[in-house]
Length: 196
Image (cartoon, rainbow, N blue to C red):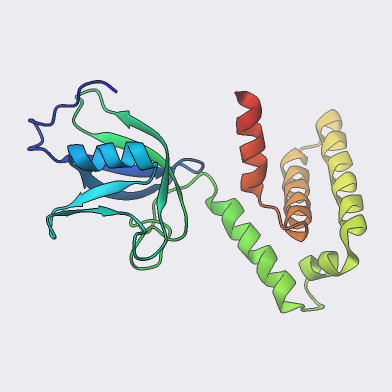
């Protein structure tokens, strides 16, 4: 890593922590040289507490640690951007992010997966999602095939329904993934691995 300008920031560099998949800003902490060294050697985000005047590793009491994927610095060498995987809520208030409305590339997918899980759990026979769950994986697979065909037809005929049909396909894919105890983030992991 390039030489950081510790003098400029009085020995404490701001570290913006971002989810490595969704790019949601999770928190802001401060690192001194020792905290950065520990973070780099352990792979877990460690900070210097300005109020307690001591080092602390995120999650040391809650278990909700931040596993570092990449550390970058800004153009002035006085701020860090840390891409990390959070293991549970980052915020002490139980939220994913300390910035309540911080945007995320997966917010809508996450919400949809939570809704699907809730419908499975509620077992309400009037719920279409539960009906799919009850029908089993073979019925879900048929719906995915049907919806994929409808996307293809909409694209070829250019009938203005590509977005609607794609939304249907994604929904049915998510239901199928959740039935198999998989998440959309697992698909993103695979795509990320392939891109390397």
